Image (cartoon, rainbow, N blue to C red):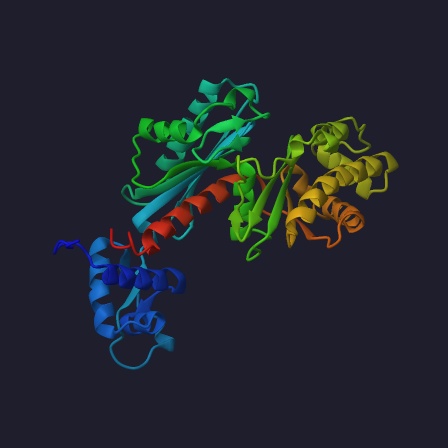
Length: 387
């Protein structure tokens, strides 16, 4: 096939992608430094820098620190232009909608949270997404209106590859909704267009991805994320990627009746607290820490319930780390220590157990990270790097 004169060659696409990745991962560099990092010739890099500047993919960076600079006129330095676009991540659940925007380097630029009634009807919940997204985009700190490169929404339930909610116990009327399609309509309604993907993913998978990106699982390739709160659920990372499974149901171990996870949180609510500060769940853990027997027994039972489900997953995928998230994660060692203790009895190789430090933002941040992964594919894939 004849390539038209205006089309970039495959080799040029490869070169541009390599240069852009070097700046994305290595920070501001001179042409000489770009050539060293990529192994390309200096003339090739000079030509590529000019093209990337015209595309808006990179920008001239301020000179380096004078104290570390060689005598003479400083060479120009170039940086990946993170401000050229935005990604959007949304967490939609029974109790809240949270939208977060970030630039192309992952720096959060705005966020907006809407508290929700768990009994909201489908149309009202979609309206809440619209409200959160619109307010979040309006509050974005960037000048002008950068392009939206990708958008991802994380939701409870089994979500198939097309973004359809197959099953959702947390919000029963959610089942059957094509959330990717509805999310795209939300963006259209608020006047936002994107030529990148608009995706819907399971919220636990997104939370696990956030932990690997910015949380206690940074750099860990095999992770189980456990959400411990009003509902108990799990997400799985394998080789650093959220694992969906054949039906999108990977991690839905909470639906296994033998575990009785549906009642685990409710049992904590039956506790008559000795202390009066904080919410009821935290009071149980506080009183257990203070040596109150009834509280300690409830905490131990809750930890055993968690550990039994985690053990089944750990014996299957052998994760390096289990992250306990959700509202209960605020208890820190008060929940992770008994889970570790029970796992030592249940597993051949007990994984490390840590409490999440990302709190209620984990799902939305994971959706941001998923959107950024789409952006990286678009920018650094030789087939589209020059587009």
